[in-house]
Length: 121
Image 1 (cartoon, helix red, strand yellow):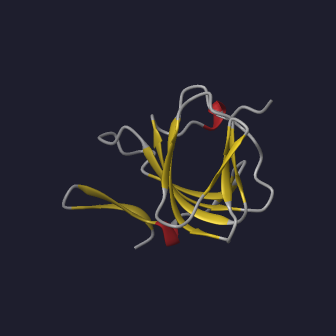
Image 2 (cartoon, rainbow, N blue to C red):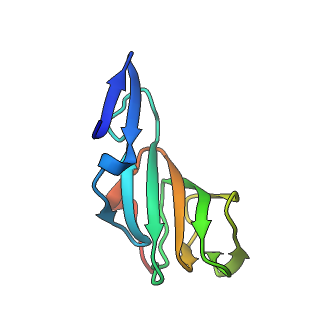
Image 3 (cartoon, rainbow, N blue to C red):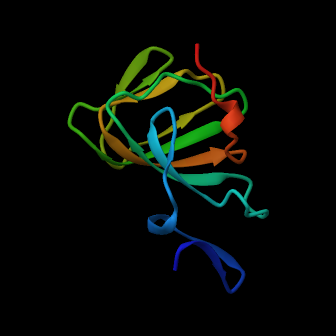
C-alpha cells in the first residue's frame, strides 16, 4: 500500500507512502486532499527547531501532539503553552502560531489545506 487508496469505498492513508513537503513548521505529509466526502485534510507533521511564526486567514488547524522534546511549547499570538504528548490545541484563523522545540503532530485542517493561505508578518 502506498500513499492513499480506497478499500470498500473508504479512503485510507498510509503516511509512510506519502512524500513529505516543506512547510513553515518543518515537513508535512498531507492526506485526503482529494477526498470529496471529507471537508478537511489530515497531516502528519515533523516540526523542526526553527518553525516560523505564521497564520491562516481561513483555515482552522487542530494539533494533536504525538511526540515532543522536553520543554516544547506552542506559541499562540505571542503566548507560550507548554505541551506534551496527548495534548490537542485548536488554532482558529488569524492566530499567529509556531511550535518551539522538536515535535511530531497530527494536524486536522478545516477546510481542506490551501498552501496559498499561509501568511507571515
